[in-house]
Length: 283
Image 1: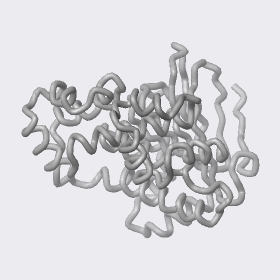
Image 2: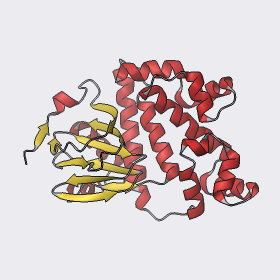
Image 3: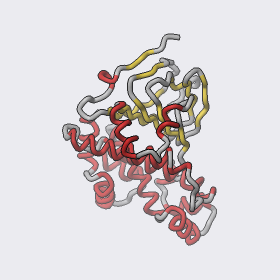
């Protein structure tokens, strides 16, 4: 099988050292490849098969992959299902700068020398947070290269430290399985569009029990969590569809568009229309 090798100069914006894209894979067109740069690939909604270094591995949704330059890989999709992927390619220089910043306490050698691409599977809360962080990449002024460089370095430091180092340290606060499952189910539009009452129903707990548990284990409230999920969905739809903002607002479950605009601007630093224009320009 021929292996394609992608060059950094053809795949990465040389002004800022990275390229971020969202795409959905529908077919099983296999193009095993490697590249001169690094990649983070996040699969928030879909399970998938991954061919890497002649080994096929099955992954569940919520998987974050760290792909190194010499990893020969591709996504397998024999059922031709819809696999949504958040894909960040970044230069060798950028990742080495980040490793240097993280100092010797960070297991950079293990990440670089592992026989297979390192990965971590995120729970519902972390998946939401990471998807939001990816979405914020497109909210930055496309032509402000200095700001883009600062943001992407901060993004990589946070992601690599939190998910490939901190996740493997002893946890002081274990989120109960029922709460993790409730949050995961609430990521689906048929649930988050209904709101708090549906979350209570799914959890099988009382309203007060659910509220106390979310505050204790996740430092948030059910309403804030649901609004966070709704805003991420709206941001994704703004980028990937031409749907009207008003329609998205009500489909997500907001009953007041002014309130949605306030929350959206607080989260993304821009109103929905400006966010869509910025994202379109950067892609």
